[in-house]
Figure 1 (cartoon, rainbow, N blue to C red):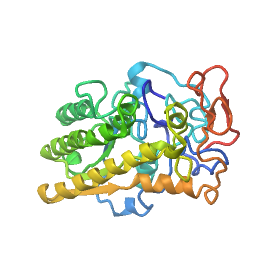
Figure 2 (figure 1 turned 120 degrees about the horizontal axis):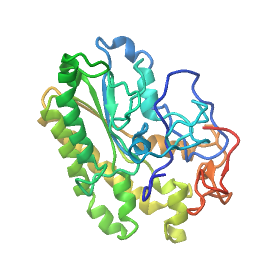
Figure 3 (figure 1 turned 90 degrees about the vertical axis):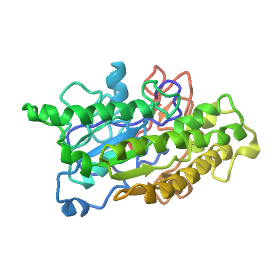
Figure 4 (figure 1 turned 30 degrees about the horizontal axis):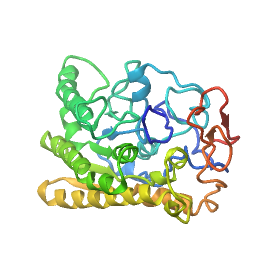
Length: 341
């Protein structure tokens, strides 16, 4: 978990192979569902090689945090699918990985990764712990967009000079641009501000996302896939470290205040997408309801094969959350569930 991050642990871009992971009977803290990936037939309908550019936080970081800070994350991260330490805070694949599989393209290389990257099908600018604000701070959304603009400027030029595994000019126009950020903005503010102020500041976060989408659109991007915020009030670390009363616990055991803030963020984000569609000619903007998918997994966990949906697979402390801020996954004293997600 990135310092100061509200996020769950994540996973890494690596060679393709192996079946989809089996469901675990432990918690959902490391789950990344393939439920919002494109159907397998999507790739057959693509006339051109798929190109994807992703911007976000740990929900879609395929190695940026590890590359940026030079941290080598050891097992159990990477154990579920890649069966080796991959340099990323996850034991399996992410939604972005399943999306790439659905499009029959290789997993996205992190933009910050210097060892053997392949940017022929795009790049991943997401870094765990990132938020939209403050601006100009590694690796806020505006910094990620600036990195993309530099990549867009240099990639066709380097291709013309004989470099390989980069994106040509047409690739940027036809690319899919994924925005998956905002959860950390909400969670971080809750550490110092009351609910009313956190909700009051959501419009500022939404404006940063609007600026990011507009900047990409103005340079030729026209296909956008926008993820909303998940139910972070159900995360083990949030449940353990957030001061709350019993009245703040909902019927699933999650924090109402955090999830209600996510719902309001999502309402404004959906409104933004609705507002941008008529303004951005020839563009497609898809709003993805990640909150509904994840909340359903928690509400109907038994149907999906889970026993303790609010309990971390890797951590310390045992039930109900298995989370100890002083002994997190990978530190001396941690425990890990028998089955990987």
